[in-house]
Amino acid sequence: MEAFGQAPYDVSPHTEPLRVLVIDDDPSVSTAIQAILSRRNGETEIASRAHAGIHALASSHFDVVMIDIFMPGLNGLDTITHIRRGRTIPIIAMSGFRLRGLSGSDDYLDMAVQRGASGWLRKPFSPQQLFEAIEKSLCIRARDPIQ
Amino acid sequence: MSEATTSLPAPQGADSVPLSIERSRAASEIGAAIAHQLNGPLTALLLYVNDLHINSDRFQDDGRRGPSLKQIAEKALQEVERACALIQQISDASVAAPPDEAAITRGRDVIAWWSRAAPGAGRPLPVTDDRTLEDRAIEANSHDHVLTRREREVLRLVAQGLTNKEGALRLSIGPRTFESHRARIMRKFKAKNAADLVRMALQTGTPADGHETKADCTS
Image 1: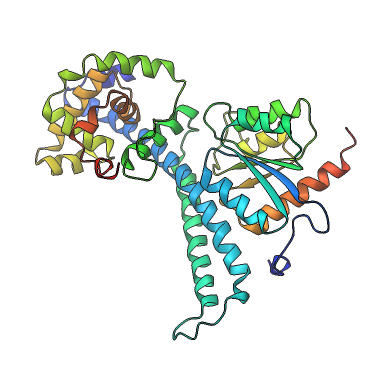
Image 2: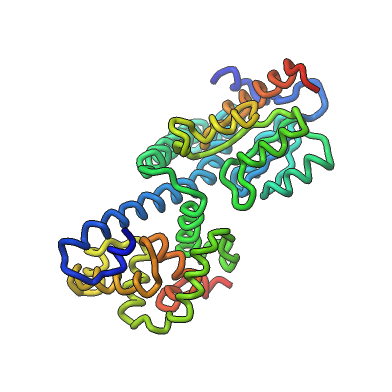
């Protein structure tokens, strides 16, 4: 915890701002992420629906995408599948549910990883967990040989 | 199974079992959905308060007696973390069976209805692609005038999440009478469970008739 006690902690130190796209139908979550990241050299765009998010991804550059699993319309899992068809961008899945999916012991966040998410965050999460998830997902992308 | 429920009112023993199973399933679905709804604001709180706490060294001592701002930030964080742990417990405990998207939407509807006075008042209800439910609601809509005044009252209380006992107490009638009113409404709406009932009631606008909503004052 103390590692992040040295404020201000930057998600993107000495470089261009980290561009983050948050796709979540709950504005409380997306605005809070935006606020927290903007204080740490992060630049966040918000999409309240999957389609708006997919459109945003197609029209501008992002370093990380954060996707809520439960959204009206196209859900997070299908959104991840859709994005993964053409992109290697790090994806962080988010969900408050600790539910079990229909396929036995699979949790929704596990399912998200199976569909290609680079990491996940169980809501509610702290800024520390948020930064760690972002860092980790960026490392995964850096090691990813596919382009 | 829904056949058994729609055949109410009937002798107490046989029908009270499936009804209470359905009620607990509906309560569980709605409980999970409520936890889901609270999760967003709590996530935001945890992010904000944590950030305040991380940076609380920068708070200037305002010279007041009592705990410092830094200590207050620490307390605030502890309480938010407690609330987060609670909501996780609720969402874990609520889920006996995996609720589908429709269940979540139903829970959302209930909350939307409860919170008509909230800043978002007047927004349309979330769209669902649960066609059959909507079809049934439309069908029910054409018959909703059949609901008696007492049935409307019962529906309103059921939608507020009251149990038969609580609802009966509120209306000063016996729980069995309350249950039979409720069963009759379910039959009229062709509802499978309480969540179903609430949703269709929302679509037909029935409960709002008898519900004193604060939204009227805010718009």
